[in-house]
Image (cartoon, rainbow, N blue to C red; front, side):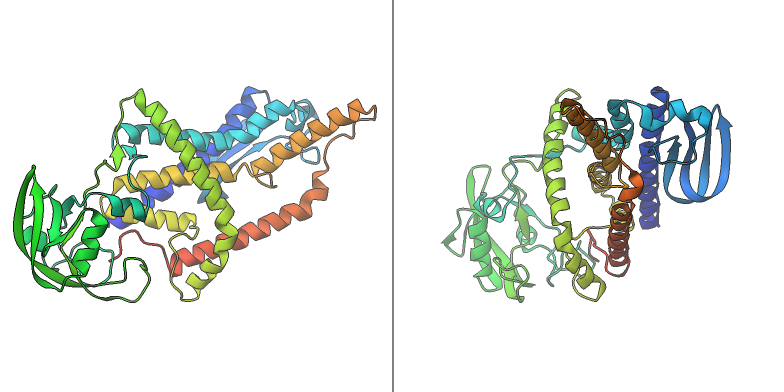
Length: 415
């Protein structure tokens, strides 16, 4: 039930985001004097609507987005009433049209930034000094936090009934103890401890540690578990020993901020997220074969793109496992991605309309400098083949991601 609630909540959050995206277009267009005739949430048959002034507002039956109708978005629009010609969007200065067309993405960015600012003050944002690579983790001091159990099979899951207790917990070790030796073999880092423990036979072992500056020794019954090699996570599993502990890094994973400090932290994190988003978009073509592999029965790569369906499923998992931070970070990431993606200079995306508007402006300026007549507006009808190609490619890609998310979804909490 909690999973279903999370799916519904995340889908509703996406619908609200898209509706606000369209509201951004509408409000800026109205502010500049452009005529907006319709603003609807959803597509398909109209369920309810009302008219206020010159705009009809309403809700349609298919809750998969929304739209607003601005009169005369292109010179080729053939449904402009002669009385509305002076207010046609294409007649306005390029900077005003740029603001109107980018208002949707700006709305997504604003939603993401506000959410990040709240998260920075409450749950905290990732600490840039926290270890981020395997080498950095291995170099950390072997300060441990106790696991509640030992998962014998090679699976990333929460503890379940029947799982053996942590050997370290049974031996009365505590969170914050620093392991210094196992069976007399010295340990200077977390990586050393992993190597030494795995190189020790399951069963009784002597563990030396330091607690509050005082050395001590404990007798531990090391558990036998199935794990792949440390340097090959996808390799064949074998029986190795486990102490039942996790690394307690020397720096916190997240940092919380006050209301003022949260602005700077949000800006820094947004910059990092922008770079990661661009890199993720650059990798999309490379991930198409992996999506097809996932659909046809292969393993689903966690780095493959997901659809709104997949994001909603992850939101449901997050709520089911009371991981609200993951829920809201998914919301932030999705809004940021949509905002960036929508600014790509491709029709029918908003970025395509912006690119054409500035191309027209630059071309007019150049022709004026050359003493030649203004070539006028771009003929959108000549660009329709390219537009249809973009729509077709986008449709196929969306179908691939949705299919993969249905038949072989990414999961954050394996059962």
